[in-house]
Length: 140
Image 1 (cartoon, rainbow, N blue to C red):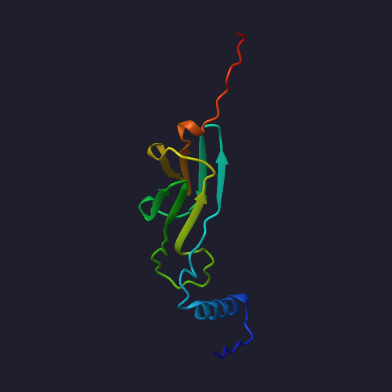
Image 2 (tube, rainbow, N blue to C red):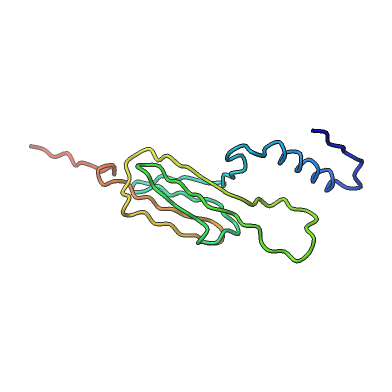
């Protein structure tokens, strides 16, 4: 594939040409364009908290599944409808997927997920037997 790169008046034209080259090279590669959202996983005594950044994603475009101790967040960041000509686009669009293996047994019935201000928060309670508890030592 031959690509002619002409001298650009600004970086946008070069950026666009390089983007086209990369898209052409990745055409036909399965899941080559699946995005991975930025995320934090926090562990407390009673639960794991998964927070993923999903700015601009509607609640109905987010899917959360649990299989054993793996949490899978997937969906799509959709391109918004535009009226004018897009001169520059750096915000990601397309399919996304986040997989998080939690290091213990979970209580799948107690999982809660909510999205606020572009951050998805998933609270995954630990299985009752996985919760640490203090045992008092007594004198016999």
